[in-house]
Length: 114
Length: 112
Image (cartoon, rainbow over all chains, first blue to last red; front, side):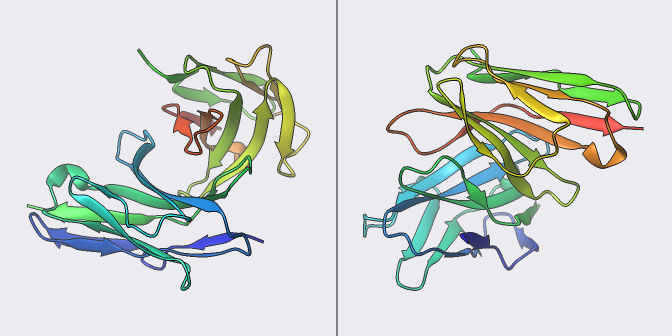
């Protein structure tokens, strides 16, 4: 079975600091995609960043970047210069190529303090 | 324009009632989903439809019946609601060539 594990239920940092959220996954597939979704208190699920497993280069989106280690099956999210608006639940998700469902981790509740 | 919209946003109902949640996407996607988020925020897929056909049914009780009249709509009907059905239900869609899912704003269902 494919599983996604986020080992940090909660994290808290000061505004402007850098924070890294951890994610590991288990799969026997070679081609797949990984995502980080953000869920603010509004409840909306917002895609933050995606990574294709066949790409060695780590994805970046402005202040958000990932550290993708395929051999270790690790996919961490780094948020630089954190802002109050980054306060949210963050979910790591995985989908094999051609599959029809996302598998989510348990989520990490991130709080950015002023 | 809302890409994936679901109604209602909030639903409070009594045990034993039947209720429906509607979902529509205007992204032209072929695949639509229902996910359930429980009180611990865990997200789990319930159903997946591709071009109106059921692809995935993740051992969901028969009281839950999805219906896809066309590929832009996927509704969820729930019979004989139970307290344990209280959760946030998300509709989502994804298109051919895109792997990420686009989510609706969620429906918070509370069964009392």
